[in-house]
Length: 258
Ligand code: BTN
Image (cartoon, rainbow, N blue to C red):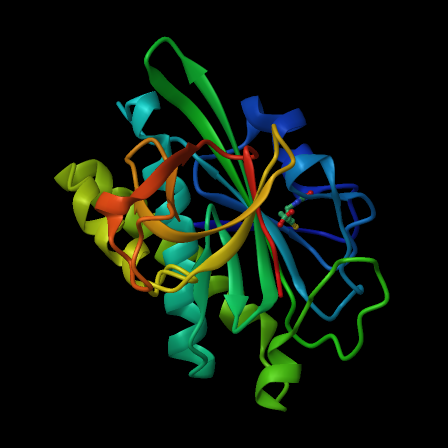
C-alpha cells in the first residue's frame, strides 16, 4: 500500500527521501508541485514548470532483494510508467535504455533510481520520476522534451496519473519479490525497448569518443547493453556473427539522436 506525502515545495523529492529515510515508511510517495533543484541522471538538473507536471519519488524497501538484480527494479519502474500512461492516456511509449521514457524520438519522462546496498542485498531504493504532463512549452536546454499535453492535445489529471504509476510500481516490485521471476519483467522491458528494431542506429562510445553505427542487441540482467557494430564482412541486415560486439554499462555509451 502506498501513502502520499505532498510537499508544497522542496529542492528534490529524491534528496528529501534520502535525508529523511530513517523516519519514512516504505512505499511512501513524496510529491511536490514545486521542485526547485530537481536532479537528473549524470549530474544533470531536472526542470519542470510548477503545477503542470509530475515530480515525485517513492521509497522502496524490497526485502531480501539481491543487489546484483537491482536492474530489475529499474525495469519495473520504467514499465509501470509505460503501462500507466497507456491505460490512462492511451499513448504508446518506449523505454530508452537504461530508463528514459520516450514518445517517438522525444523524452516524456526521466527516472532517477538511487539504491542503498548492505552486503549483497538492497537496503532501500529511491525511485524518482519526472513526467511532463500539462506543460505547453519548454525553455530549458533539455534536448528533446515533450509533454502529454503536446502529444494528446488534452489536459491530464495529474493526481490520477500519479496514483496509477505509484501503485503499478509497488505492485510490480512486490510481484518480483514474491515470484523471483526476473525474466518476466525483462521480457516486458525488451518489448517496449526504444530502437530495438534490427536497424542501424548511431552511438558514441564515451571512453574513446568514437561515433559508430550499430544494432541494439541483448540487455543483460546487470543492465549492460550490447551493441553490434557491423564489420566489413557484414550484410545490410542484422547478422550478429559478422559484427563487433560492444558491451556497455550505464554512462559508457550515448545514443546519438538524428
Ligand atoms: C533524468 O535525468 O532523466 C532523470 C530525471 C529524474 C527527475 C525526477 S523529478 C522527481 C525526482 N526528484 C529529483 O530530484 N529527480 C527525480
